[in-house]
Image (cartoon, rainbow, N blue to C red):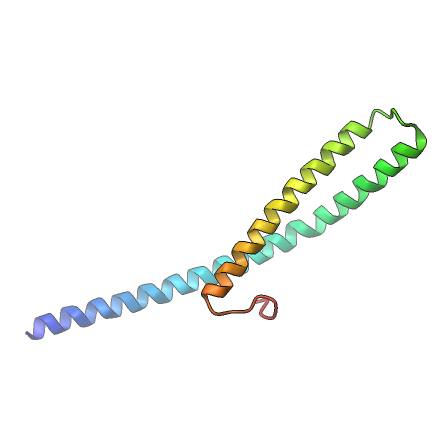
Length: 108
């Protein structure tokens, strides 16, 4: 009987440690996702703004400018990246919710 209680206690302790490890891993993933979103979003904003500026310059200079196509490609690629960042941000928010955190307040 004592062996059964010890085995059960060890199993409960292992589950608790495993749950704590999983929580720590989720917290680390949440923090890293936030860092990645921030690290990519800042230069992406610069690229998007400059591409929009170049498109305006190309359109005012001449309507058949050879750079319009490549600028449109840049705009499409930045939109794809922006969409991917939105999905990563949503994942971060779901993780925060599962951890009982409010990511709008808790940034760490």
